[in-house]
Length: 257
Image (cartoon, rainbow, N blue to C red; front, side):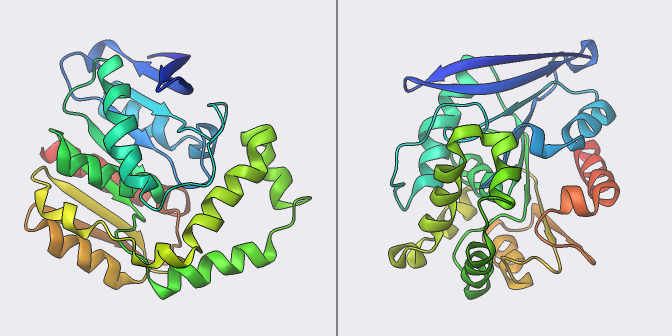
């Protein structure tokens, strides 16, 4: 297995991309990892490497604009920033990398982006962990709690290891956007019936930002080719908090395709 870090220009912005390839990955779909709303390459920890090795697939893990070592965001964000990522940023990135029919693996914001992309483009499969398709009261309460507890010298310093000088803007872009009054009406459920590829929807039963009803909404929207994994004793990061269970479920799901 070989890896390479490179910067790819999309819409005049440099995005940091980690590419992983191996001999056994030829002529197979590529795994594409889409990080959370405060995420980066390193914040995935070893989850991508374990899934890549288990499946023998090539992969890309990238940082969206405003995250990690990619170029800064332009603020304020529009309400439909997740749809924009799926419609205007991910397609040209995959085109430049010559990736077709990927297997999308998204977490939180990345899961929402994956679902929108899956509705609009050919894919092999989509795995969405802790994704949102609308705003729930528990989502707002969870974010308000984080904002109230945010200390630049504690959480800020931890995030600074990944986002550097962009940290304040990265946190603000996440929290301020979701707490805007006009964001309460954000909803991407209309995209779900357009998803025709197999879908695995994963959520922790103790997710701080979504109720189990959210998964039901996604399953109803996609239909019979969607399945769910609800993880016991798990919050908003199933791939870290229940790593082995989630890995095994994803591996089984992909092997069946």
